[in-house]
Image 1 (cartoon, rainbow, N blue to C red):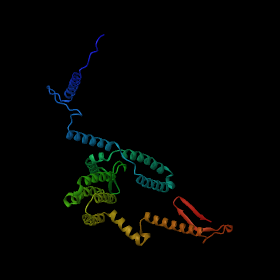
Image 2 (cartoon, one colour; image 1 turned 90 degrees about the vertical axis):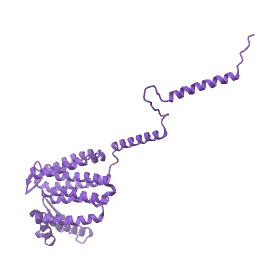
Image 3 (cartoon, rainbow, N blue to C red; image 1 turned 45 degrees about the horizontal axis):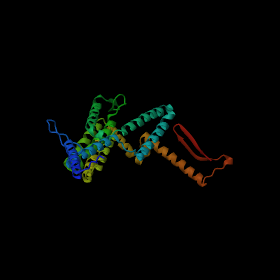
Image 4 (tube, rainbow, N blue to C red; image 1 turned 120 degrees about the vertical axis):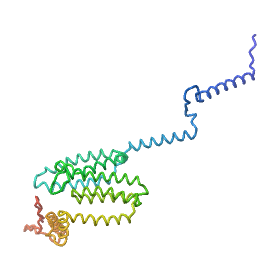
Length: 337
């Protein structure tokens, strides 16, 4: 019978320990950087704690930046509702004013432009606001260039140069958007310094003064006042000093009033408005028609109230009619019993 080989416990432990040491050496040699002429490389296991934290911050910043440029956010439904109401009122006014004269011609044209405007709204809403910040200065330069060019090459209508291509392009409307983008970007870059005189109010006055001066030279005082109001509102929300705004507002109002008084058209409109407050018959034609319409609507409202309350119930057997007749351009209606 053959004897079974006996195992030596000591040799077994020595063999296992030597194999473990060999495996450990292989792992350490694989994890250690190579130094044979090539540039040492780092793996995830050999990154130190500060290096790993810096890499994590870079990844977080990069991912956040990509999300900021791709995610557009939710729609502002209250703002959309207000815009829709204004558009609906505008369509009704265009239809009411043009239908008796040319039918639905201008109404259909307005609907076509409304469709193009909705498409433009959707496209513009998908653009991240950071893009507008990067191009704020070029947009303002283009707006100023157009405002200067219209004074030389614009269409002369009624003693004013406000448009290009027979009224198709009006640079002052482009200037409104440019003021919103540029002033918002400028206010955001100033931060707390916006309340300072040298760092906030004076540069703001130069920017808005340049835009409004070019618009006044057209002349177009109503648009200049709107642009001025837009800029002051953004400047105030951005953290401007209220006292400085009040002083500048008073000075600007006086100067604007003096400039408007120098132009015959503006002064006549102001005097017509003042005279219309005391004597409506001395107001302009559109003001007189508006006042007459308000009077007729007031009479119609009183008549309907009396009918609902039973104070002026007509006698149907005799065919009695309510004594109010509403007469509008292109419309004729009777309030019958």
